[in-house]
Image 1 (tube, each protein chain N blue to C red):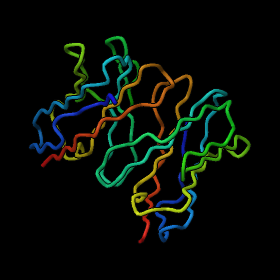
Image 2: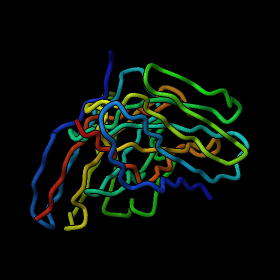
Image 3: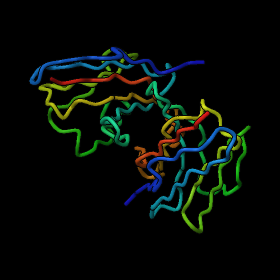
Length: 113
Length: 114
């Protein structure tokens, strides 16, 4: 069964450093998402992406964040200058059509020191 | 505004007991979708069910069943004859027909004691 993959599974970085989290959505899917889950808390929406542009973003997704689909298969989330509070699990998700269930990747656990 | 409330933060049951996880949602949309996801200790989010607002038929899948009641804006999830492998955090989520983001509840942590 096709699945969403994410790399790396864990990343540790120093505050102020840039990180890029990578996702490979399911190949025929058209809508892509990033979510964040701070330890022990609920899953929070960051951004949605369709047709090579951001379609919606939350208040969390400020100028420090950016997304890109550089080559038609990868979908990346970049955090330009990490802060301690960026420590969380980051989930990528994709769907074929709007309103369908989102298939989530296994997550990248980011720790900012 | 869209909102999902899971009032039960933690539940513990003994194996083979039935358990119901509550979910109450708020939306002004007439068309919307409700979901349940399971998050085991390993951390991934596992899709369990999707229900649209026009389909109030209850669903059963093995030991899992879901009770959707529009009149009370609830979408409750019951596990029958619980097993240790059911131990996880369960999230209810709402997807509006006008938006394209999920609104997750805060999750219910279920522990099944052998």
